[in-house]
Every structure is written in structure tokens, then in C-alpha cells.
Image 1 (cartoon, rainbow, N blue to C red):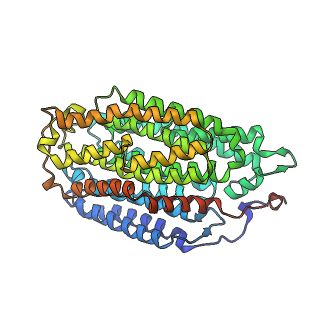
Image 2 (cartoon, rainbow, N blue to C red; image 1 turned 180 degrees about the vertical axis):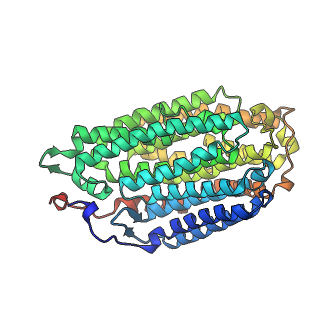
Image 3 (tube, rainbow, N blue to C red; image 1 turned 90 degrees about the vertical axis):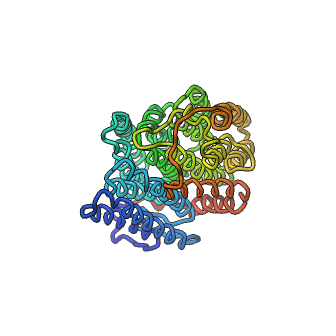
Length: 503
């Protein structure tokens, strides 16, 4: 009757090999660090980059395959592979951005890079999870590592505060998620997502499970848990303080990697497998999307610290993604995946510029510090202007095309008022994004920055992000096709008949 009594577990090497590689490299970095000096952190970073690149190649080699491992607890489909690749890209850029940063601040490289790799492992588990227990394990593996990374600058009170706030509120949200999983198990008798979908697709002996109070309460609690991870209003309170206090590369990792992984689990549960109960929670997503977009953009208008501004920007972009989730359907799913990829390069690039402007214990994070940057560092200013315009949604950059696909999918589902709210919010966001460009090109003064010639890894991060933003925007067809195929692969799994769940 239950998957817990299913006997021998099936095993599929392709589905777990990228995860195994990341786990082995994480342990190897930690062990090598025992014998390495602090000034050898660059070597540990390069080892981490090598491991992430190998995992990327292995994941890429499995495109088009479909497999299950551990009785369906781990899934291999294009949906999982797409998110694995996006997560590995975000981790790669984070490590690359950190090579000089860790050395400049004399941070312990072994612990730092291994925590990034362990967080990446948790994110990949979220992307490949086929049951609620693996989703919980992936979420906790990711979260615990990121809690530690947020407080990694132990001598900085802001970093310690960020870690404590993230940990306390994160533990609280995890409780909601775990209670939700327990209630859904109580309603359906299973934690396997495909079996849950079968159970709620038709009436059982006790009545329609999809509309039972136990099921609806479980979905509501899980919605709160994922709402915290994606920084949706009103579960966003941790975001600005944590983003401001964490080391800048870690902030970038949270803004991109954590968001991508959280949406992987969020989409897999609510759009792919629990669509039969969609009418019960779509209106909640409508309200969350409107509140998240509006609150994020409105509060970002008054920020003077660029990391806090980007934190509220990340909240607003979570709202745009929730517009796609409200629309549901394959077109919206593909648009969400495309948007996440474009956002990954844009946000990573913006935080790389923030890290480039910093110098040792002088982070230079005020927007006023960017005054006159175009005169001192024209290339860096041009890159930052490009990222700000992409976040605004200016064509032909990735941000514009992503919003176009998202809003088109929502309009096709009749969500006219939600799209109007989203369009108005995009106009509002232009004010604070363009204010950064104005400071760089039209004002004088600002902070003295470090020349990029002495920071090749940081320069490479910015350059890769620029190429990604422009390429995804100018040639959206192949990326959108890959995103649509990835989402379709998750929804094309043959259903399990509800009768097969009965003893």
C-alpha cells in the first residue's frame, strides 16, 4: 500500500551523479582546507569551480532523459535538469565572484566554499525531488548552509544580525512547511507527489480529497513555507536586513540560487502535481502576487543602500513570478523558467558590481557611492546600467522579454487586472533603477573604487553576466523553447490511477 513498504529501491546513476559530484567536491574542499593555509583559498575556489563545472557537464549530458530513483523520490526529467543547470550557474558565478573577495577579507576559504557547495547540493535536491520528504531535506540542507554563510563575516555585527534573523525566521517557516507536509500525508496517505496527484484527482471513500479541510490546510501551510523562501509579502521581513548584512557574494547567491531552488519546489508541487486543487489556492496567489510586487517596488523607492534596494527589487521580482504561477498552464510555466534564467544573470551581475566597488572593510554600499562611477570606471558603470535596465524591463534585454512572456501568459488566462498591476509596478521600478544610472553618469563625487585589473575573477563574473543578459534578451527563442520543454516534461508524466493506492 505505501511507498515505505515498497521493498528494494530502484537506482538511476544519471539522476544522482551530478548531486554525488557536488557532495564529493564539498567534502574534498573541506578536507583539503585542513592542510591548506589561509592564503591558498584561491586554490580551494578553483577546486570548487572545477567540481561545479563537472556537475554541469554531467547534468547537461542527461537532457532528454527520463528516469526515477529511490522509488520515485528522485526524478530525472528536463524540468529537474533545467533547474540543476540554472543552480549550478548561480553557484559557479558566486564562487567566481568570491575568489578575490575571500582573500581580501581573509575569510576561511575551506568553510566558505564547502558551505556554498553544500547549499548547492540542497538546491539540486529541491529541483529533483519527487516526494515531500526529499523536498524538506533539500530545503533544510540549503537553508542551514546559507544561514552560516550569511553570518560568515564574524567580526561584522551586521553579518551576525543577518544570520540570526535568517535562522530564527527560517526555522519558523520550516515549521509551517513541515506541518503542511504532515497534514497532506494525513489526507492522502503518501508523500510521493505522483501519488498525491492521483489521490486528489478523484473522489475517494471519504469524499473529494482535493477539497478536504486537511488537504487545504496542508496546502496553506506549505504555501507559507515556500512564500518565506521566495520572499513573498508578507513573508519577506527577513530579506532587506539579511541581504544588507551578508557578504555580497552570499547575498547574490541568496537572491539567485535560493530563489531558483525555492521556485523549483514551489512549481513542482503547486503547478505540476497539485493542479487539481488549483481553484482552492489560485486566488491566494493572485493576492500574494499583487502585494509582493507593490510592496517591493514601493519600499525600494526610498532606499539609500543599494543592497537593500536590490533586496526589495528581489521581492518585487518574486511578485512577477507569482503572476505566472497564478496564470498556471504550460505557457506560464515556460515563461517562469525563462524569467528565472534571465533574472539569474542580471542579479548576479548587479551584485558583482556591488562587490567590485567595495574595498576591504569599506563596502561602499550607499547609492551615493556610485556618483561619478562612469568617469572612473566606464566599463563597470556600463555593466551596472545594463543590469538596471534589464531589471526595469527595457528592451531588448532579458528582463523585458521575461516580463513579456509572463504577462502574455497571464493575459491569455484572463488575469487582466493582475497584469495591469504588474505593468504599473514595472513603471514604478524604473524610478529607483534609473536613479542608480543617474548617479553614475550625471553626478560627481562618490567612493574611490578598486581597479578591476587586479581582480580578474570579478571582472569575469561581470562579463559573463553581461553576455548572459544580452544573449538571452536578443535571442530568446532557444532559451524559451528549452524552458517550455522543461516545464512540459514535468507535466507529461503518466498519471497513477487512484485505485492503485488502495490496499
